[in-house]
Image 1 (cartoon, chains in turn blue, red):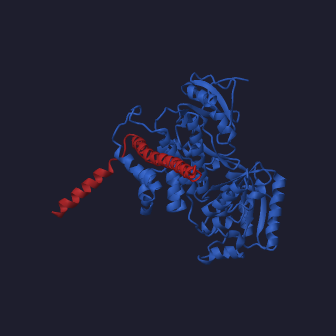
Image 2 (image 1 turned 90 degrees about the vertical axis):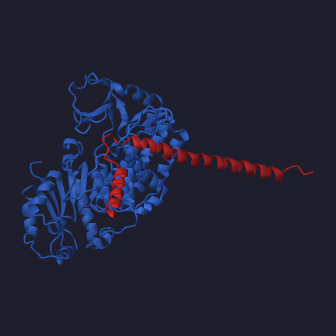
Image 3 (image 1 turned 180 degrees about the vertical axis):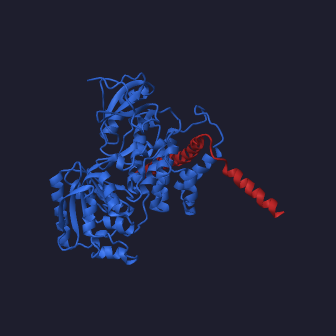
Length: 465
Length: 70
């Protein structure tokens, strides 16, 4: 095998861990392991922990490269299984974050039994592959020093417990706070925000409220990590993990109804027009054979599943958490491997975040997708959000190569409803202008009227593909 | 007089809130973990022994019932 390039440069977000970093070479992802991590890595393998975790599908598998990079610090290079799409914790819905948390605790329990421990509990160490949460940071483990505390406990509480508590006890939209706080939600903020009744819940009282108070009172003091006084017995350590696991499993969102939850029961489709729409989309999928599909405004994933059921990697974006929850519940229940629901506010998507704007990518940077679905979406953008067709077309052209898009005219009752509470200033909102503006960025390959409705559905291809 | 009272209360409230940490607040988490772990570990062990004691006592009762009658 050829030696890898001498001057490997790390992927922009991979710089915090001294144990190693991720880099790309010819479109493939690799991880360099530095000498400083040699002992822990060898133990990870020799103890059998790696094999056990791979067998249980809790950690991403990797193969060892024969050669190393020419960097002096390089001990070994491994090639992990590639994640086709990177999603961030602030794009996950409640149940996804909960699943990642439980996955982490399961890993930590198993690691403990093999004499290792996770040195960090960042939610960014997890991804969703084939519909399940999995740890992608193979260098997260270190040998466990007997009777020492769990070093990642604080980070676990900030990255997982705090947002789960805030979203379940206050409002699910608090999950968005994770976008603002790159290292998890500060515990004092979580503690102040949570309702007072949570102080009567032993679990939250301990891990959030009292934990936060302890943090503040020790903020000025130094502690020696090697101090023999830092002692936690094996039973206490396990009891802590079991306590976290048991209580997080019980957490759930209160039954809430948003305007979108019964969406498909009151849409403007007759059974015939619904079937017709599905047939057309299938026809478009067959014609283009995309490898990836982004369904913007996916709701419960009804149309996204037309793509995912054919083995296409499909990402079902929506702004409504109830719809996302319903969609993800189904993914988990039916063990779907090609569909991933994710949160997206299309009119205010997350930008490049983190240090120097290089750690977390915007949606656009993670694209373009082969195909975008924009079904029953444009009227919301154009009318409720005053976006001209030109702007919508321009942004969509950055997100995907092919576009399956629906135009809903003013005569449709849904659009009438949007206009009912405001003045109709939307003189441009006509089929002809829609087609004209989109033609500046796309070539309209096909356009059909949906049977039994006044709606039109288009297949468009980006110009200069 | 009330001014003194309120300002001293305010002073203590501010004092107890502490200044924002210059050092990464991991130290408090370690200490807290040991406390919570200790409490949970204690109940965990009690639960474990309670089960053992329970099954031990039940075993004795069964023995007496089936015991040799003289």
